Image (cartoon, rainbow, N blue to C red; front, side, top):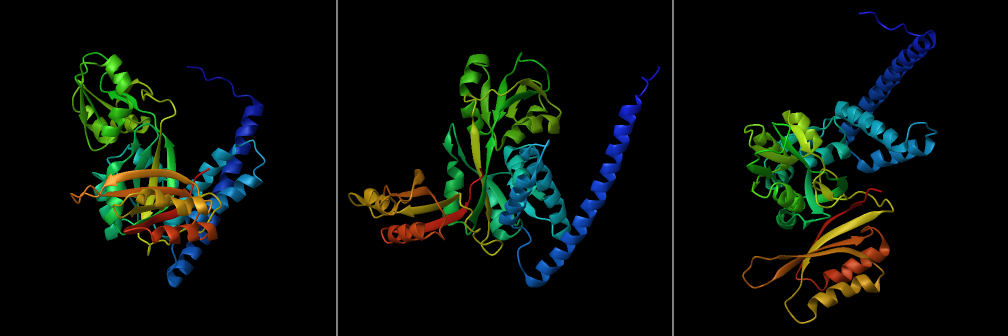
Length: 365
């Protein structure tokens, strides 16, 4: 077969690109060598290798200097991967996530740490918390809240007794796709997914697959893995999972809410990384309980109002004491290092029978 004749102009441009690629590679390796020296100093001083606030500062500086034509979002993604690869030379970061490969939790971890992080796949969020608290993983990523179905109740319960704290957050646009061995919707008997995903797609499933069993499994990626084993089964999962397990996407983005998002918390032990410094756009999460008396919950909120602290989330969970007592999970705007926040929290703590700050951390723009 005759190959098309390459124009001289195109050939010259490709030569330029090849030359620039080599220059970029040389510069990246120079950066990596400097990063290795940084790692040696951190190791000698005993300071943390991973600093999310430093990553954010570098990316913000690069975005400000960007003159295009690359978009800032693409520049940020490129630099996050560069920093992730360099950090892996200093000290690979072990991150516990919900498995198997292809979960949205995995995607959130890669967005926060970059793809050079060493991921540890867990069967459920209990295992993620345990691996992080035990030091098997330095960090963990867990689902916290979905814009359609609300909080991930198990994560809230696990925070209550775990020694870990929150040092960051990732908010993902979540699109659930119907995945299957066969590229059509015929004869699907079972749909497998995490309970939250099944709930987020219930209207579509009721309309299009009314007779299919909805079977809850530990994660969406696990549902995709199981769908690979039976031609009459389908899973609800990401495009990443479809590629991972070699499945057809027979229906795209079937979640009931087009803007469906999930918040993921990045957790670690305080000795792994202390509370990040204030960024100017922060959230403080806490869990409290109050004595069971009239007006106790109302009184709990007054310190926030009096000191101009905005509350962005208020959830209750049973204390499981058999006494109709509750723990309250609260998110507020601001950082514990800010004077008005610190004063409000000190007053609030004085009203509580139980009080624990889960973390004070930057919120992504």
